[in-house]
Image (cartoon, rainbow, N blue to C red; front, side, top):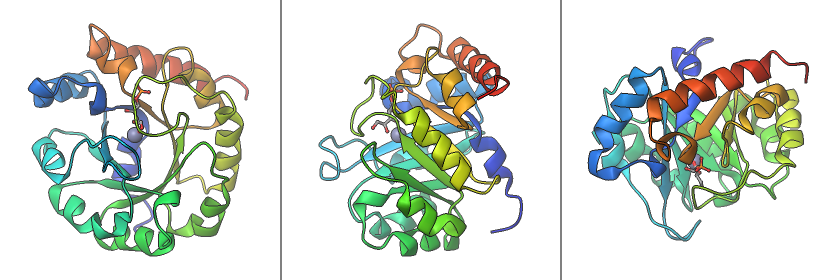
Length: 230
Ligand code: DX5
Ligand code: ZN
């Protein structure tokens, strides 16, 4: 990976999760948040095994290609190394695999970069940060689950702030620390103060009457948190 990949800049900021969007008008909902300033779109892939629900596959990524934002694909699937090529071909810019989903974690991260995507590693709330320390040179992003994966609209787990702090300290500056789950106007500032730089928000964006305005309000709250002493 080159020293500075511009997709790392896009990845920082508020990442609206389409899981909470109206799929009947997916493309226009995404265009609306991009027009409001979102530089990254979060796509939650669930397989019915790693987590109970089944959501979407590569064709949804393909449908969002060219929308003008980094396509950030969160793979909540078992043995993700078998699917990486299909998602990369569909246009994924970032592919995030779960530490709990494969014994071939280091291999999966390497494959991701070889396919030309940024490599993300996700940790469930109960998973210690060890896998991040063991693979830090192979990582572009760590996704810290701040709810248990599988569903939108859950409550933020408060012990996550400390975990985010530890993750940020364990990673080089170029790596992105993303929080995912229960991120809203009440929690985003403290996440930023703890060291998170990418903020996934589903219901706090698409669950409101004005998703574009919600993105801007969340961005402002994150910026306020960032400038606060941790
Ligand atoms: C949950 C997903 C999240 C989800 C977040 O497993 O990984 O990305 O969309 O939804 P909210 O923001 O509603 O908690
Ligand atoms: Zn997600």
